[in-house]
Image (tube, one colour):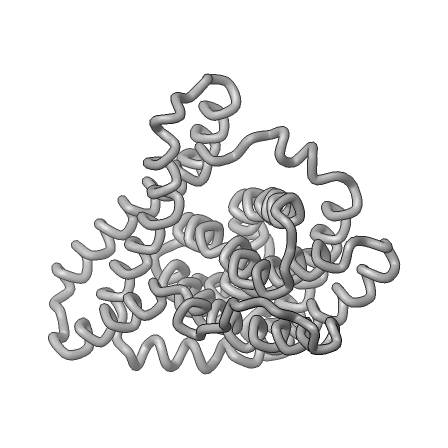
Length: 300
């Protein structure tokens, strides 16, 4: 939290040199991906498979609820369709990554993309701050909190931040759940591409091709390969502890970069309706996740 907040404070009170922007972008995106790959070295494939399969029902139900909510709210709020879609996939799947993957498919304009990312980012920051307190309020153990944060916080960086505050086990579980959830970028994007193609009466002349390799975040492959190596070589607890330390250092660096990317005026420019759409959808996502955890007995 401090890494993000200090970054926001510096970026909105000081005039940072433009020469720093490439490094800030690298830290907030690439370094975060490297930290997740490092976490892969601390987990075996059996652990990933077990947690990933257990999280699938929660992920599928929350995705369906988010989809229905977005469809209803777009009509009720009379909001721009592409804006609603981007905020919807950003909330339901993977924040900025889902928006980045979806926007070219539905041919969203730059200002719509910026508006959607700014809206989602506000709730990412709120998630990092609020979710640990929600975990303590509902007396969640670390495993339950991992499932909760992994299914109900928008962006990977925010999931990592909130779960790392709660504990190392929460971080492991949340990372697996979140990466499982992120994989739904692929069917969602392909589905939207087919829908958009049909919506334009088969008259599109775009030369852009849909590639699963381009859609799927590459760091997920790195994470799985790292876990495969860990499974094969059966690392000692000391080596695993070293990888965890490196991962936490990289996470802190990445979150500082995230904070340094935030401008307060971006939230002001988002307007009322997109924020309301994002807020209602996110609240319903949180409530759905909590209800499923309660029904399945993970939350008492």
